[in-house]
Length: 248
Ligand code: NAD
Image (cartoon, rainbow, N blue to C red):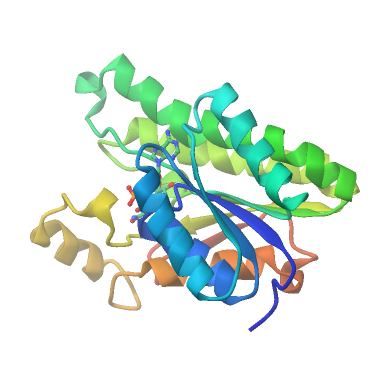
């Protein structure tokens, strides 16, 4: 498929897991893809090499999305290299789980800072170029937990619900400039983020999924590629749930 031919994309947290799958899928559909990692430039470089192996251009970049200065530099690096940024995927995310009474204020702040403030900073920095171009695609990676909540994840679910509000508000603000903003809400996808969950919890989750299996990072990447493409030109402010039917 070449739905994204000639487009440029940035995937935050693109160095592993769902972000890596998104970067590779966008490249396979023809986009040049910048990959941003928070700490390990080497892991971003390894994904960038896989993008280049598909015949696309890539940039391996390092930024903490919760730091405005880092984000401004990140977006400037993409624009300096390619002159445009057509697709922004806010995928960077962390968890610091704990039940309400035990959750530390620092755990609340860390998760909201990366998952929600990070998306706000990236949208703000990237949308200037998109507004000038009078086109753009923003895809925010939320979670089913942002729709239904989860005991032990008040910080994470609040950040993922917040991303939905942010998505709908920027969809309304930026629609007049030809920019769409949508969210993808994954169900349970085995990655390093979810590796700590016991086999028992995973089996219990599978029992709640009508399609009877866990999702893959590629399932999420396919939804992102669709929302980033012209096939989704008339879709904005939506939450696409990719969870095997767990939440409906
Ligand atoms: P992961 O831990 O494997 O990857 C997270 C990525 O975010 C990493 O590349 C990491 O470097 C990056 N990151 C973390 N903090 C950052 C920061 N401050 N600045 C820049 N980058 C930072 O997790 P994943 O499972 O691949 O998750 C990707 C996204 O999907 C996250 O937003 C997560 O909340 C969401 N999600 C995951 C699942 C799941 O089941 N795995 C379900 C729903 C939503």
